[in-house]
Amino acid sequence: MKPYSSQPYLHPFRIRQTDATSANTYVQDSKFLMRSNEAFKYLKDEVTQWRRHLHRIPELDYDLYDTAAFVAAKLRSFGIDHIEEGVAKTGIIALVEGSGASGETIGLRADMDALPIVEQSSKPWASTHYGKMHGCGHDGHMAMLLGAAKHLATTRNFKGRVALIFQPAEEGALGGLWMVQDGIMDRYNISSVFGLHNEPGMAVGDYGTCYGPFMAALDEFDLIVKGKGGHAAEPHRCIDPIVITAHVLLGLQTLVSRGTDPLESLVVSVTKLSAGAAYNIIPEHVTVSGTVRTLSSELRDFAQRQIDSTAQRIAAAFGGSTELRYRRQDPVTFNSTIQTELALKAARAAVESAAVNDKLAPVMGSEDFAYMLEARPGCYMFLGNGSTAALHNPAYDFNDDAIPYGIAYWVNLVETVLST
Image (cartoon, rainbow, N blue to C red; front, side, top):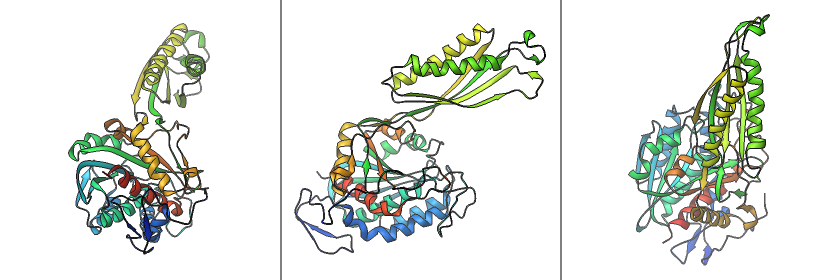
């Protein structure tokens, strides 16, 4: 973790410390105040208990009934102004009204679902649902946003409204898209939206993001390579789709190394091959499955066209043919300039500036928060989780030491964006 001062961050208003154990840790002279992570350690133990409870009860995709019930109960206990449950089946939208009149509403999003993984842990808060675990830290994301919600509902040191977005089905089931299609952006007049995700390998207390494309668009494809089946002893009477497929695979890799600008980011990964049913039969077809990841819409269109045309040309040279089934999934996670500036300002108020990286390299993984960023400008931020196991690993666990930093980021962000 980057070193930080033990004194409160005085940005840019004059404040004095009064009570380090309550939500009113600092008394302000102005209408707007940003605080370091130290100001939110009073919430750490309580929020840790919430996080560990959620870790014990992981649920998948949209079937988040126990998880959603816990989140909604906590929100009600904070005296939140408005709570809508059942958004995109099990999602939740909660509104916190500020102390001043303003028409602007910003959205803060936390994902809720777990992964179908058997957890490898002996910790007391390990999963009680065999075959399911919070292997991506969504338990921590929910808990940090709940901690921020409690603080914001107590202090209301902002103008306008905060929409707390608890989203189901981030792990491949397009929950972000469904929530947008449910109309939350228009229904609540959300003007900008922000997301936060833990990142193993980054020091606790470090933040990182970048301007523009931050995470890749994800597409999936099934390529059917068609030939003419027959007896394995008589390949001359067949058109062997397995041989064609071997050449197609090389052609797809050449698409990246020779068909794309080296300064552009394109990843084509073939992850599954399906063919044949017996040792002595040349099959009729081979199914080639994989993913395509890009950082621009232009390159995304190019990749789809070239996969189709490259495969067709190669197959035709051998007397075969191909059929491409191409499915576009998550779009590019794109950070807007103004909102990224505000997000970085909020992070730098929580820690020393050296712990905030505004030039983090884009990630070729995907994130369905991108659908919300297509609907509204915003920013996606990483928060360090320390030296833990990797995301989606059976030994992973969210680092509770990150909790005050997550709460500080959310509160500072609200007080930054809704300060006037």
